Amino acid sequence: MKRLIVPVLVGLLAVTGLTTSAGEPAINPTGTWKWMAPQNPDGKTPNITFTLKLQGETLTGTVNKSTSTTTITNGVLKGDEVSFQTVREGISGKTTTTYSGILSGDTIRGNIETDVDKAKVHAVSEWEAKRVKE
Image (cartoon, rainbow, N blue to C red; front, side):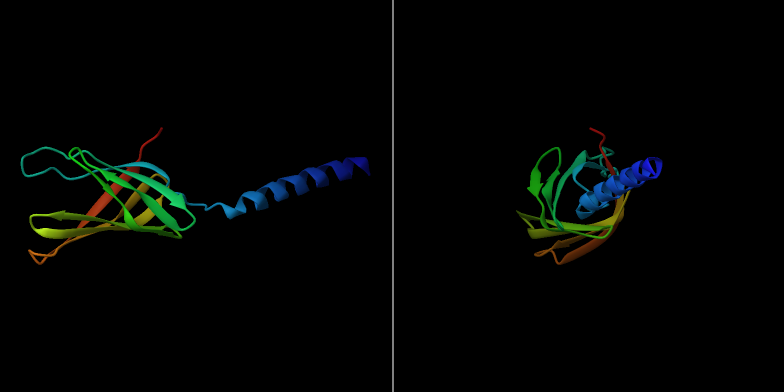
């Protein structure tokens, strides 16, 4: 009887441990991500990273370029879908960039939509970011 009780108790403890961590999301984009950005017309490849932090379903963080850092707004994680925006004011008016994609392992793949108010420009392109191992 003792031989049967020990494996049952070990099994119960393992299941209890699994249910305790069940409140944590299975997919978590928290961390630093490097965008595999295409080359600029001058032939240089931009160095762009995203620093993301998940709090519940809300995603916060920054987009870090070699010349600036922009705070993320409207960040959300729903299932494996990630989306967030950046807003910048400049000569062309307000530029809103919306990043959306599917998170799979250490990769986010999706689309970028850029809207420039004054120029009335709407552009869509693909993007892919890889998690930076820390």
